[in-house]
Image (cartoon, rainbow, N blue to C red; front, side):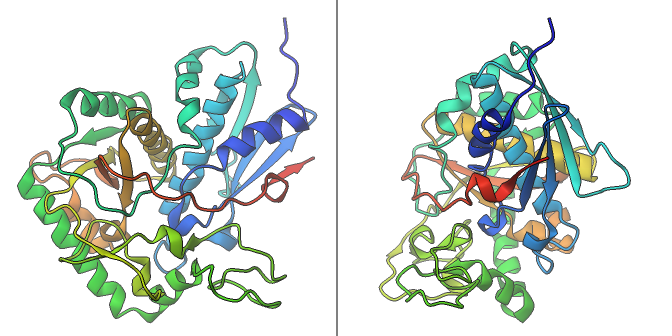
Length: 343
């Protein structure tokens, strides 16, 4: 029997869950289109929300959109639907990243439904974690999550972690002498204590109509300043200082994992973004706090040394920090009506 087509209400439900995904600077660079005639949802990247300085090839944009795509798959599975995904379905339109059809009942993605409770609990934590090591059994589960999406997750040795920390410091120094990159970061951060006035825009707590922003990184999510050297989390306070911000000591030996793909094409980025979100949701379900470290990956000359030189293969798509600590506050999300269009 042919499954009924999804309607606008069901699509809104799926997209509302999809947009809880992380994205670079919480820019939320996605747009969804429901084709009522076919019951398919198309996922587009939004170039207006791209980081043209820090992400000129739009790799990070693809990762964020793919994370939202994975959430959409989880939502569909939770509600009894199988999401059938075609990546990059139209060579003539590179901003059309995926086309998703739905069947009933759920099939291959049935295992995703168990991740649904983690969707709205997942946070990016820019706070210090404890020293308790992540158990090997949990790390094995995260490796398996990456493999299910066609990617690889490696746990670097301590000497490699030290190398990665050095690359983070190098990336921060490079950003300091690049005013365009600093300005781009500042445009997506704001202090909600600032007075919202009509005509305010990026870099304040209000949009162009004076309403509270529903994107970017508010100061409450910056976390404390590091009292030591460079922490593995991006310090958004470097571009937008906040009065009275706390200081804290971060882990001297952070627990990091490296997500990589065999290739480095847009299709690989889309697979990596789905793997990244699967890893983050599984980690959340396992009681772990997480954050992402992308600074060295934004500079081509630093991204290549980030890989494991022992294996010497693969392309690092994200460095993920794991541990036990505060989940961190949530960041705002754009309304479904703003990102979902029905045709």
